[in-house]
Structures are given as C-alpha cells and as structure tokens.
Image (spheres, rainbow over the protein chains, first blue to last red):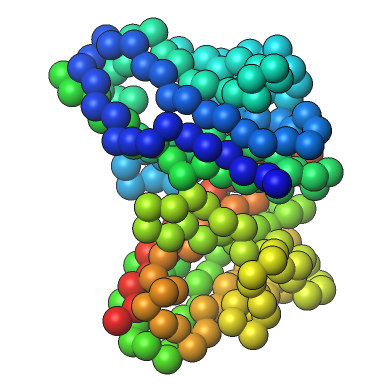
Length: 112
Length: 117
C-alpha cells in the first residue's frame, strides 16, 4: 500500500537543541519524498524534498536524506529556534501524477 | 509560487445542511486539489478538480457528497453536502503550478475549518 508513518508528537524542545522527526514510508517503487511545514495560522508550505535515493533535501537549516534501504526520510536540524515551532508533515509521491500521501503530522514546540 | 485564498476560513453548521467552500488562486494553475484533514489525522485527498470536466474522486469520496466545480483555471468550489458531525474537519485547497508539474510541490490555502453540530 501507500502509507507514510511519522513520529508521534507533540515534540517539545529548548532553543538550540537537536531535532529529529522520524518518517518512514511504504513503496512499490521510488517515489519523491517531501517535508511540508505548517506554521501557526498559515497554510502548508514545502520545506524540502528529495526525488531519488541518497538525495539530501535541505532548507532553513533542516535536512532529510532519502534512504532507500530503510525506506526513511527523517527530518533533522542541528539547532532549533523558537520560530521553528510548527507542525511538520512527511509526504510521499504516489503514482505518475505525483498525488501526495501525507503522514499525520508532528507538532514541534521550541521554548526559549 | 501561487497565493491561494479560501473562504470561509471557518464555519459552524447544523446537521443536514450543506456548505460551499471557495478557492481562488492568483494565477492560472494546471492542477487543483481538495484535501481533508480530520482532527488528529493526516491530510487525505478528496478529489482533483478538473477544469471543464467532472472532478476525479479518490476512493471513499463521491460526487453526491462532495460536489466540486472548476469553471476556470483560477477558481474552484467544494461543497460538503448533507453534513453530519463526522464531516467536521479542515478542508484544504491546493494547487500545482505549471512550473511544478510532477515535482510534487503543492501550494496550499490556509484551510476552511468546519464544525458540524
């Protein structure tokens, strides 16, 4: 089937802490993988993506590497800021039309 | 990029009534989609809104319950018909621009939060 499993939240960290949000997917092929972010009061927006195995997507200090062998796309950031507080969604492409399948989302709160 | 406006942003409705959600994009887009985000759940694709033809519905969603219109390349509506409390959800419009075909990058509206009593 087509599914995306994300680490359950909520996650609460102090500023400058290291962040990892786990994401694994099921696949019959090699879909594109994405992380979307939803800041409070805003719509979802693309954070980063990877389109093939071993690709690393990065943006705003966040990184995620497409791991085919473990079917994972974990999101990491070395030093989080209060402004990173948001809900993060892992997603995978599905089929040739690239319709996305989303994980349930992980809420991150960063305290000063 | 694309700027998407949805309205209403939120509404409280009575059981058995219907509500139409509007989605306006600031540019012409190739693909428009409607998603549902139920409390504590992930986003689920309801349908693809096709310009000039009937929408393409995903498994578990039907036209009688969620009629969709797309009269042009910048506008679409989703109606939630004969609502029940189970329809309480956030409904999201999203688009894929011509430059983003098959990249998987979607732009989302802020969503319409619907509560059915």
